[in-house]
Image 1 (cartoon, one colour):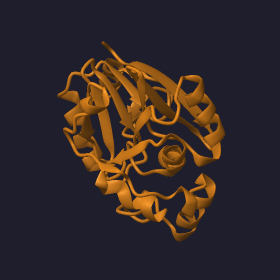
Image 2 (cartoon, helix red, strand yellow; image 1 turned 90 degrees about the vertical axis):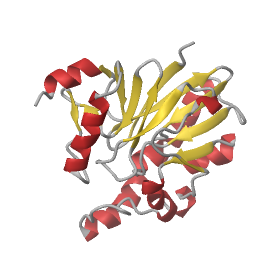
Image 3 (cartoon, one colour; image 1 turned 180 degrees about the horizontal axis):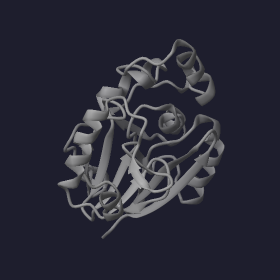
Length: 223
């Protein structure tokens, strides 16, 4: 039976998507949004039926603070386990979005935690490190983890048995579906895209922008 997917879009500096997946009587959340929009996220989760104990897992597609900002709060509030790739774990443990990445300017590095609200209280150590091929069926979700680095070294996607892909920030849907231009390693990102093209994917659920059929992305990005 296909899982129910609820998109929750939070706006602060930009729009960012979280995806709530219903797995029987429980839930899994993919990404957690900005910490400055915690109240909005909490209301959306509770209106969907999330309660302490049934939001079993939050899968974080990468370490950027617009995707991990509410993770620590959700663990405290709902008892949610937090899962991500170890390649980005230092970002959330140390509050440094440039950990294991090429370094941005000093001023930008100083501004990021302030803009995204990722102080010491938001930092956390993941409960679970997940790698390529990790099977989520133990949480009632018929899906597997894909390691798709490029935007960051620890970027992951989640591919369901029905062909739904949650791609984090590898792909976006702005004016049209495409590769995110903001890449830590463009060559690696292109290799990740080629990896996706070899898989059975129907619909892409990006971190930014509306879901889109994968065929549109492939058509727009031939060659």
